[in-house]
Image (cartoon, rainbow, N blue to C red; front, side, top):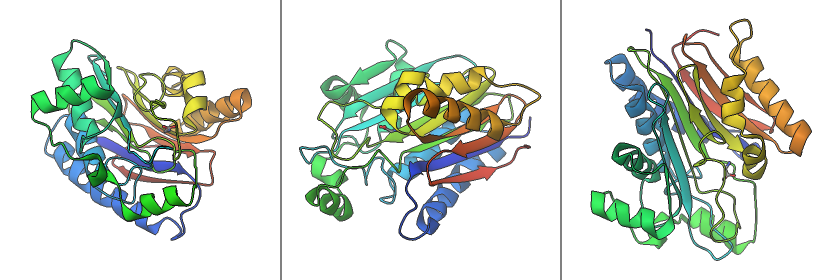
Amino acid sequence: MRPVLLVHGGAGRVPEDGGGGAREGLAAAAGAAWRLLEEGGPAMEAVIAAVQALEEDPRFNAGYGSVLTEDGDVEMDAAVMDGNTMRAGAVAAVRLVRHPVLLARAVLEEGRHVLLVGEGAERMAAARGLPRCPPGDLITPARRAQWERGRADRGGGTVGAVALDRAGRLAAATSTGGTAGKRAGRVGDSPLIGCGTYADARGAASATGDGEAIIRVVLAARAVDALDPETDLAATAAAALAGMQALTGGTGGLILLDAAGRAGAAHTTPFMAVARRGGGA
Ligand code: GLY
């Protein structure tokens, strides 16, 4: 198979810089992941590499740079899913963890559960020796200022990736700080398998946008279910998002990839940055 990679940096408002910063961050993240795929590495490692790089980039709402809860804390969600084995791992409302996507992978690898939350997930991070940090280390000056201004948003800046590797394996990963000003304990769509993150042998999807709406329509699995050899994937993603908007009023974005290496993206928000490497329409 020829590998394919799609990475998104979240659906939302048009950034003040017009999106140049987001595109630059995505290009760097996609570059590292793409090298892995070109060298024959697994799709799962590629999506994790892309998302981990974006968790480190303060321009995105994931890891360092996450938005703050109404209490002024960071609580993050992340998930990974392997399409060919249907194995998945996810964490929600985690603090103290530099890279939630690595913790989600640890949950997948252990295989005992699919979703761990809060303190239990943080204990697993410690047991696995994953990079931990005091909560304040994840807060950027820009996010602190946003919180002080009391500015809420719907979670723009969530990050995600989908990949197909040379062996034909599909994977998806998503990571987010959630919505600005959210209640402590709020869990969005990203760590909920089938909602913000999904992969099976047919396709892989990562969603972004209005998490409560995405959860209600189970957007990522719905989009993979709708894959059709006669329809290009941008149209399939757009139809899934239009259906969500009609049913719930919610908006968002989606990246979608199928087992044949076709890829597509769509958004119903004013802006979503996407980087793509390889693949046909
Ligand atoms: N879509 C990200 C969130 O709502 O948490």
